[in-house]
Length: 299
Image 1 (spheres, rainbow, N blue to C red):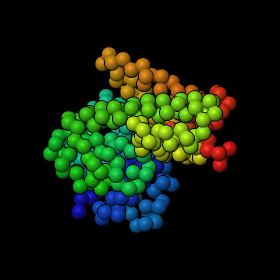
Image 2 (image 1 turned 60 degrees about the vertical axis):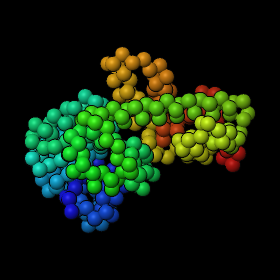
Image 3 (image 1 turned 90 degrees about the vertical axis):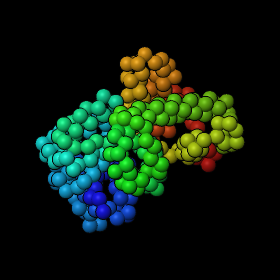
Image 4 (image 1 turned 120 degrees about the vertical axis):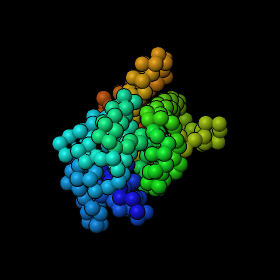
């Protein structure tokens, strides 16, 4: 069985790593905050004391951390991943970062003789726990196929997107659409609440028409219940909208809707809701209008 290392045991990484354990992979884990390693150590999973030592023990290193700076730090720090890479190592970068950051990570790994697969994932904590994230894989097709058994343990489906960087582009595409849709949904719900429409009735209308979607069903229920526990934090959505807008600016692609969505998330963060779920973008609108979007049971 392939020896796999997993770097990053946050809200997404931990359930992904547990799925690898449950599937019988020889797993070694590392997290910059050592407290997150403890449940794995208690379960008998090997824990490395540095990214370098993890990389030296395994064939495949999966990496999922918060942003591009964190990816660069884990790769290039003292005793980082790059210090342990050799020609037998494949690094699978699964974080959501910018295209230039992906290219830099790929160059750093291949310059050390290793192989690199770009595979950010689409989905939140629930799909991560269920192993049903959407893997957005790119890179040399043979190298992607060589790690497909690892990817398919955490992702269903795995979509091959093309050369290195195309997985990152696909992730920015889907997350900018996610942020735009969430912002429009929050505005519509706030409009309705200010017109004395019940949230239950608004959700019923959405769910029985052309706009029915898992996003609106799940986030509508969370908003109605006042449940803003972070499945995908607003801070991360704001980061991803910025990445998409930066890339669009380089290409000369006008993105007025996405720019407006970014500013709505920025306002929610400014009011202290950045570490709450992305659905908390509605809280800025509620606080501005003085009307909450809640079910009758929650009022």
